[in-house]
Length: 445
Image (cartoon, rainbow, N blue to C red):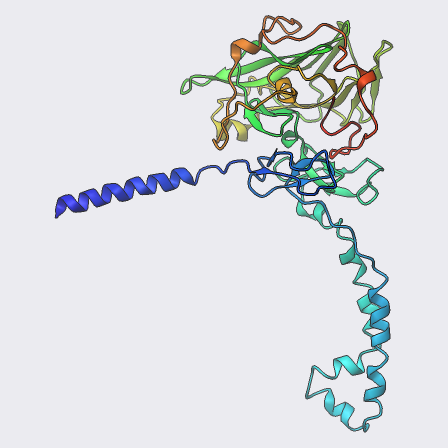
């Protein structure tokens, strides 16, 4: 008898373990556009963002998986008011003909009848005034967040959302932008082309993965015929793990015959108001005044434009016809260190870069840690459904220095090839879900 009970207990424990394992982190759901009107997007596989791995939908207009479905077109407001006004007059005449004594008796006793006949004339004004607010449904979304930074849609091609103020979600209170198509705020680090945190990448296919690399080494993250981007990793060894904690500290970017450096300065105690961004073009340092909107522009061709999008630590870098990058310098906070056991001290807060890339002229042969996810024949190697899907390839993507093009997957020649030249690009549709200029999150043939 005791043996039977013991066997039953073991079976139940095994069953419980399987159930717990099955209930782990949900897989990113694969979704499709089902509207045949959008031929370029119809039945194309998309994966849900990590912020809503199982509950997203495809916005067929932008061909992106989004957590919040696009707002339905606002119904016409004129029809309802006239109907209320026409229906309200008839009831009063029916009540007035009746004997005058009943009205006072009707007030105290049956509550339902009196309000409709006797107050039929006053109700129309109140009914017409409240109706417009609910019909203009776009405003409610911004109220979903409270204490985040205020952001607006800046694309006039979306009049239903243009200029409307939103608050950044609690997950990214000071790093988000408005998706003008869905008219809702989206974290920069959750968009395709993002590289943030302990390098967490969101590929051009929308799939999230981690590439840890190694501290104090350089890795090729994008390489194509006329763009090559290396990232320098800084980090700290965790004695309880077989890898380093790593972050992207700087970028070395090559295009045409030029080079561009973007880096975070070494910092001990962090202060948001003190700029810790380092920039140089062709070896010459770039100085920007500490004011949002201040701009630097090269005299070379293609034109390089660097604009502050905050007073300090955040800029937008654009090379005409080639790429655009949003760069923000951020520290490892005490809370981050405590939660992830980074072991950060006051001697160094490991200031690093959070990045959001957008490309205008990639070829189908593009490679690199991030670049490969934009290639025409790319099939994701990431194991879906795990808590931290990791992409390997340290040797494959390793570069000897920040401005070297000697990684094994290098494609850089310093000039556009026929497959990705600007002459072959079609710029007919320059609206995308991010509300920024460009075709989607990447422009390529």
